[in-house]
Image (cartoon, rainbow, N blue to C red; front, side, top):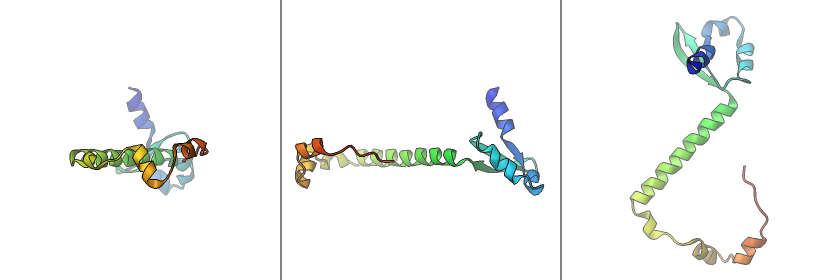
Length: 107
């Protein structure tokens, strides 16, 4: 029942945009993840908060990477792999250099 209530609360009529209420509608995205815009009582568009858009984009990217990994596994790509230690040796990076390196935060 809560899902139905949330959905109903997220509905916005295109008429509200036409009546100059766009600012109020966009303000709602501070507390809501998405709004469904209705035109002639049918869903016409979805407006996402920046946070929700980023969350969904991250999920999509993770899914693409998962599919790529699965494709490589199924294609026998694991036959051509090398160990982490061998890769570091090929690059000329020693274990002590890795231990002495500062921790890097990637955002």
